[in-house]
Image 1 (tube, one colour):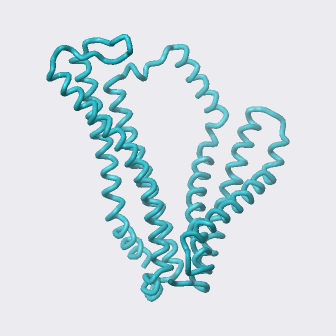
Image 2 (cartoon, one colour):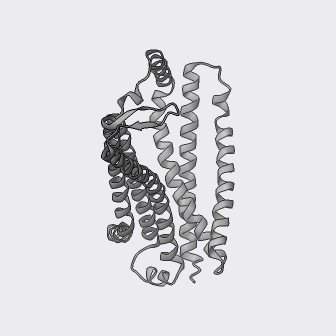
Image 3 (spheres, helix red, strand yellow):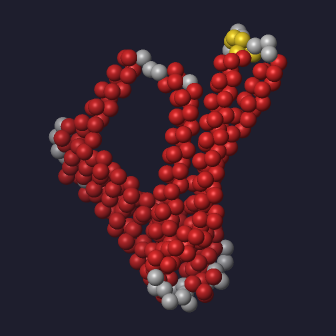
Length: 295
């Protein structure tokens, strides 16, 4: 039943989010091609650089006109690219929150709770779909940025050139960082995953609390609940992490101790995020089973 519910949820959200992610990648490709064409045309028709630093076009009127058109098009595409990036990330968040709210706390909730599906299945469906679309949006965003940067590198590789001294300094800094924190990368990845999942569950719990408290002005109440509950939980997490990591902070300074402290803090934070996520899950579950307050 969970697989069927998840399939239905993914289909419902894909109608909006999938075209948006495809559009983001398409705009990044278009912006990259336009930028490459602009730079090629600039090399072909550039007559020099004026005293004010502006490009002086060669005598060809057609070349100058085409350059101006392509310059304006490239500017619009680059702006559109970054706008679509922001819209894509925000849209995933807004749509998934809206789906959670409408499925449980509006008239649609009457239909939702008449289905032969457990509350656990409903919550897990929403949580897993939100995780999937967040991963997909960040993957599409990373791919789009990679294409854009690769296009710039291909068109103007000299922009990425650095002198030997700077290159040596960067390599030494990276080697030093890797020696100290390289083995903690896996802990950082686990902490990031646990943090994201816990944030989703905290958001669902806060919305459930807000809808449980009132039937009127729910947007304002839910927003206040998200703000207050998130703030309280963040403070508790910070205090707990600080207290639990005290034994590691009192050790003498050395590379091994710094590495051990970083690993300990990440591991403690990961465990606390798991506790937070589980607690918010059962809190949301209890509200949906016992304190549901439909419009």
